[in-house]
Amino acid sequence: MSDDKAVTIPAQTTGEPSGGAATLTKDAAPGEVLLKVTGLKKHFPIKKGLLQRQVGAVHAVDGIDFEVRSGETLGVVGESGCGKSTMGRLITRLLEPTDGKVEFEGRDITHLGVGAMRPLRRDVQMIFQDPYSSLNPRHTIGTIIGAPFKLQGVMPEGGIKKEVQRLLSVVGLNPEHYNRYPHEFSGGQRQRIGIARALALNPKLVVADEPVSALDVSIQAQVVNLLDDLQQELGLTYVIIAHDLSVVRHVSDRIAVMYLGKIVELADRELLYKSPMHPYTKALMSAVPIPDPRRKNAKSERILLKGDVPSPISPPSGCRFHTRCWKATEICKTTEPKLVELRPGQQVACHHPENFADQAPQDTVLLTAAKEAAELVADEVLAESAQTSAAVAAEVAEAETEAETPEAAETPESPEADAPEAEVSEEEPPAKEK
Ligand SMILES: Nc1ncnc2c1ncn2[C@@H]1O[C@H](COP(=O)(O)OP(=O)(O)OP(=O)(O)O)[C@@H](O)[C@H]1O
Image 1 (cartoon, rainbow, N blue to C red):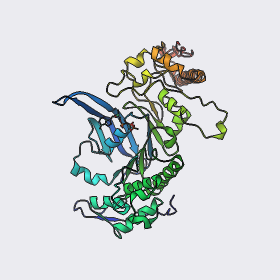
Image 2: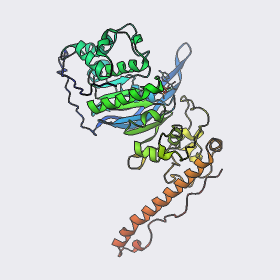
Image 3: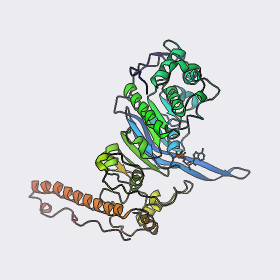
Image 4: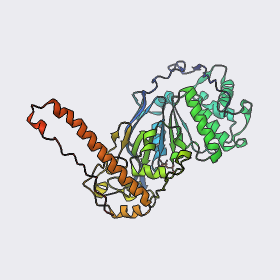
């Protein structure tokens, strides 16, 4: 980690006539929406035969909506093949979306061409997973980190070499190693080089795609902490993609959980950890050990998921997770649940959420697949899940009753006021048939 904490980005001058001097001002104030994604899709066509006729498509990203606010870190998690990297490449416009909209600072950038995207490339940068293949082995690290200045026609104050050396010290590397080649560095150091390159043009948004998964576990924390420090110092906004929650849990403000091209849960970190609502989130969380001494006696039952993620070529109907979910009923197979905000700061797409009142309590018969999936879930987890859902349902019912009572008292003259508007069930939701 760098000792050089006093990071200052000098003003840069640009060769572009229209660009003007690159300023240090972050246009979006902290908390304002920097990036907005609506109905975003990417379907990769599958072509066959001599005529290369399209016979199908990989539904890598299949209609997602989210926002990234200035200064925050949005973590994106999900198993391999869920479309996280494709999403990262779509929002950095390295891929052309099939459908939907990407807005950056209020500007629609969905279909900007190469030329129009050029100035924007400064503001949106990407850090890649593999620090071995993402750095050209024939170039010195001075050339690699200095490349963005040349590509963008930007001349930093004091020259490129001085700026590259400053960036090296910012990411905790020796500025004297300017003339060395990537193979002379360890994996962690190479990832620091990738970070220095991404930071060169003082970006507003950095999308980091599995930034530490290729590194030794002992090095991972150092790189994550470096990203965290840089965010504090430079006011960066991050989208950090990871396949499990262990990497993003400490650095994210909000977390989006992806499954087969969809966001199934999007919540403030605290809420997600305290009471995950989507069964898939719960399963992902159960795979992460909790290094908390206060919880050493707490049950940490693992939830094993049945089989692999289904093919994104023909994703399951309804809720895509229904083939592996231990709570799935008929409605899950037939009707796709919408991503809705069930609690302030917590959106979820599930008919039978955890830690919340059942959204389809009339639908009680478990699918055969759910019974098989339940075999892999510890009895304690199933019991706890039923218990918390029942408790939340009772709480919700109680809150509704309280909310209705004063209203009725205020309008005693109304004949309807005496009669309860809706029956509030005191009953626990019916137990799922096993
Ligand atoms: N260029 C492409 N052409 C065809 N299919 C693709 C392409 N890129 C990705 N896919 C497919 O899209 C799906 C989503 O891939 P993606 O890499 O986005 O997932 P991921 O969640 O990032 O997984 P991983 O962590 O393994 O990278 C996968 O089935 C993948 O095979």
